[in-house]
View: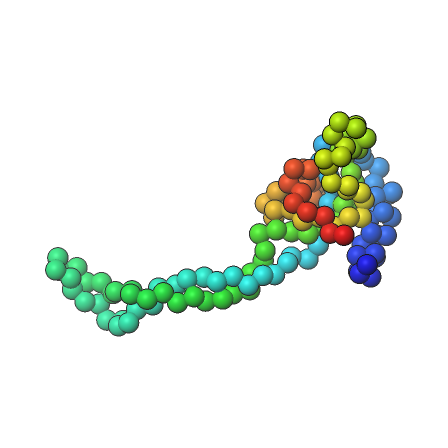
Length: 140
């Protein structure tokens, strides 16, 4: 296991024990640094930058070709460390009817979720609420 992940788990468990709130439906998560990915962006390229008149007399520049520019941007997904597990999830996990179909999530796990899914929680610095169905994956 990666040393950085172990440190995150220990830190998350320590923080979790100090948070006196229990949450009903949403995971409390500490977002990690943004994941950067390379994406291609298409932009039109003009062969000739001087405007030409068409048959209707409109002056325009023809963009006949497309050039792909690769940029490094933030991913559409975030990684975060679970600080608190909601009671509803704990109950569902314990239920033999639903428990087997749920991911095994606990404090300290690193999850992947859509960037727009997290809601900032202003009562605990740099934390977000994430719903269980917004969790895409857990890092093992």
